[in-house]
View 1: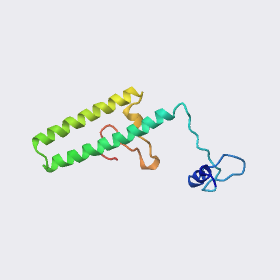
View 2: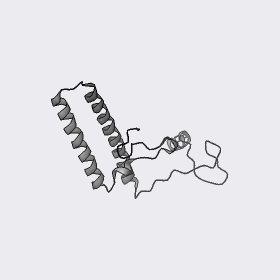
View 3: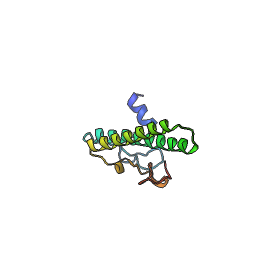
View 4: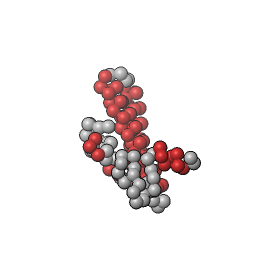
Length: 123
């Protein structure tokens, strides 16, 4: 078995053809990547992960502030750092023709990956 065949088998990918079945018994599906959009899609994925981490760091910092674990100087430094990171994220999105809403992946029945407009319910 070649590497390509092993990878196709591991991910349940097979060429779409008459009578072929995928891992769930349904018709086999072909993985298609558009060469024209693959770079933009990769940038979108990376920025989505960075935004998720930024929001998690922000929540952690707010939790520490609420608990009183930080000095005033530490609170100020964390606040400035988070604002700078937020501005840089907005700049990167603009540079690549994306909006922050574009980074919010729809996870189907689970909802969206990132909270919408300041909702505190996700991630």
